[in-house]
Image 1 (cartoon, rainbow, N blue to C red):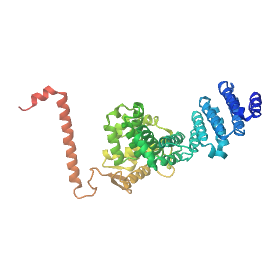
Image 2: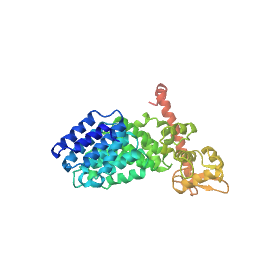
Image 3: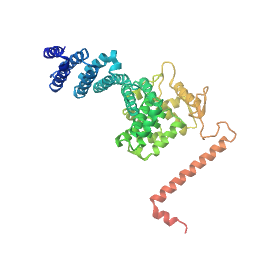
Image 4: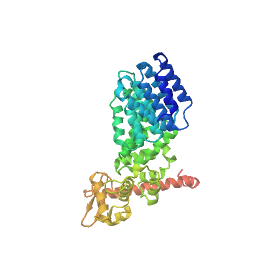
Length: 424
């Protein structure tokens, strides 16, 4: 409820002549904004009473628009709770006569969104902006302003992990030719768009595509250096969380060869994954502590995205160490435990079968013997006529390459000895 003093002043202004009424309302507004009450709640109540009085007055629409614009502008410096309470009241009050006050409604929604953002009520902030008529014929809205508003809506929804609403808002940008041109002319908007796209893919667990988007942002020199580093770290994290297989291996290779990756906290686990080493529980636990909540969420089978990615990676790494292995031994290596419905060995078999079926790993399963046979030599069929000969050739090649690496290492370390042994 408005203060008694303000109520009396509003009644006095209402009784004034039409010629004096506009000046009286402006004078009263100046007093309200320059010497507000100590209580934020009282300040909000006073402003609401003032706005209602102006809207119900006999003033002309042009005068009312100007007064409302001044009131809304004054809200930029008030506490968040006042922005929310007064902004919401203005939006509700103008709803029935929106055609006459589109400019004021848009400004009030901007203030309302700022208030909700300060209170970390991001979904409500997004909804406030969504209510702005960006395709109005009564006021001019530039294509850039439209893109900026849509991106803000997307980012607000993402703050509350509402990826469905965020993607719906992002599609407005995707489907707009004018928006595409604006982002082409304004690289800073393009960066925000790409980051939003990456975060949506990340939240939807489309990790490989998210990694590619994050990596693109990390190369953009228009972005802040710290933002580029964070984008690179996000690219590594999402690549690690992606399902094991040839596509992820290519992504990991690109990231591992990027000289900047060595400066990130994720480099250790990236290196182990790229080199197809088995990951220890300590490595996984340390990496898990850096992940976002949605990246640690449970999947349909009760496991986390990370645990599933690690199991599949370790299965791939095991295939590089063993030509064949029992399902029980594999389960032990993968850290699987017996469940109510299936044993650890059966779980290991299921993981291998799924990866074989999806073409992410080559081999076959002997269910009767409980043995998994991996394709030891890439491109050589398990039961092909030249398998053992090709495998022998592959092993000899590997041995020769190892000897060559040893010789090169000795040459670099013992240069004088190497020089003495050289044939002149």
